[in-house]
Image (cartoon, rainbow, N blue to C red; front, side):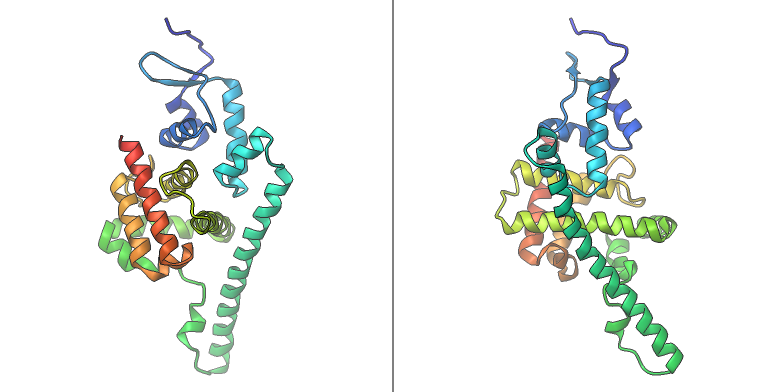
Length: 258
């Protein structure tokens, strides 16, 4: 007979309280990052206070931009917390460089408008403009998807947009690093990145499946888009890196379905 503990919370409860998804928690279990306290005979997962405290630390480290493999090493004592953060600073510096480019492009536009001199389009949109993929989004997933995402993005404000870009840059950097090292796209490290990618997408209104997490079809289609469009592929080190992301997302979906 299963032990009954009123203090334990169901996986659905924990996902709701933590602002994540049950799919993410199941993945954390699968990779050994966060095990449920007990699993009932019917397969339902339950978490006690100690597990919730561990999840809180995982989410805090995630907010700092650390990847799941690094978090696992930190929690297990195999990697120094400070050293992990130092590595992450390098990612943030890269993002700062991109922000500096955006600032320069806007300043160039201002100078041009004030002086009446012509301005090249490349200068105006250097590292800038979240609407550049509007056509793809509307064609593939509908106008409502783009409109919801656009409203959400503008509502973030400058600070929120800056934090979101930093998380995006950290995720892209970790994908590129894994692809460069020849990581197996169906292996645990790549699947952890795919889960992180899915969780990142889950927070964006307009994403098919929002707010419970992106649908399998959306993840598969997005992976193909990353490879097909050089603008997306550039985020992952080029076509080879994008292909790695596509294959890892496909493996992630296949495991979830299986």
